[in-house]
Length: 135
Image (cartoon, rainbow, N blue to C red):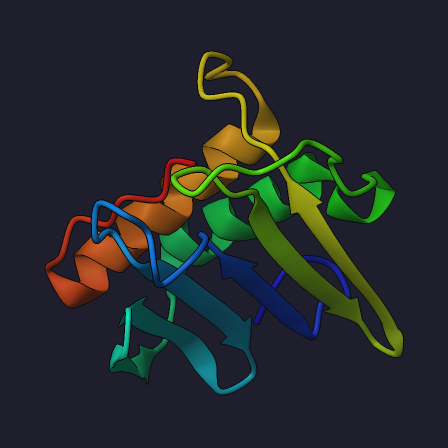
């Protein structure tokens, strides 16, 4: 299903209470598929899991590995109501890593930026909705 040895990959874009109404996007990729949830305040849309195939699966696997999430530490920057860190959870067997990362969108070569851009493209492809994932 995933990157080398990965059994679960999760991404969260932020708060469902974003002041501009962007809400929070959550994706989970495991052996049941690629699941997408969008929360805006109390409204929740859960999209049916989809199977990633071919180039999408290979590219996502490559970007997860390139982001080196297990070697990162939580970013410690005070949040503001309209800006929150991206959260990631990655499991390789029994080893689970959870990390929150402030994204520097001015660095398009950053592997985390590239990973989030791929996630956004997959969300749009499988839901028809263009997500706002920038924090």
